Length: 260
Image: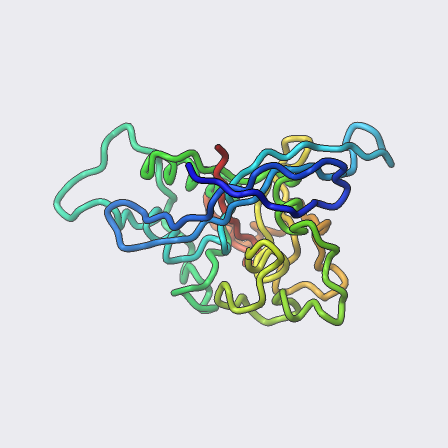
């Protein structure tokens, strides 16, 4: 694979960044749906150490690719509604399981084509990655919070509050189409605001990163974190509650990464 050197440093890094993979466009087999993956150079980032209160730890980040935007309904619909399975055929019995029927209007009327998928659980996002990996032959997964924050910062300080609206949707009534604000220094859109994004924290727990459309500017940042509580499924009529959907978390979305 052809590669090029990137001269960008992440915050807290004390070494030269590693090579940056070339960005590419992925097409979901069996459909016309495409999405773009942005190459991120390797480096290091300083994060709070979950094992020692008040301490930090330096984490090495290998080069990877990350979705240029949040996963949209255009992409997630293929997974949910089996749009990649030709009519008159059935799916292989060994295929990755698909989501249950969503609650009511899946997009809440916020918007669909070009809008980020919402109300997606961590489990649903993980299964989407497994399904996408099986479909494409490339290994996709959710980012760790260190990988996500490293890509969010893109080697730059967070935008000042008076510049935040240039990069992020926040304090809105609903989500907005992806990719309409300015990208960060590595060409990645909507890392802050619009939907908060599922990651795996340093303790291995699911966490939403970055803040969302319904947050105020003061709570939008690369270090913003939200952990799921009961209110996120308060109106789920199922028992046990769905593992695929969060009935009351329109702020929950995700994006994928791919490692070498």
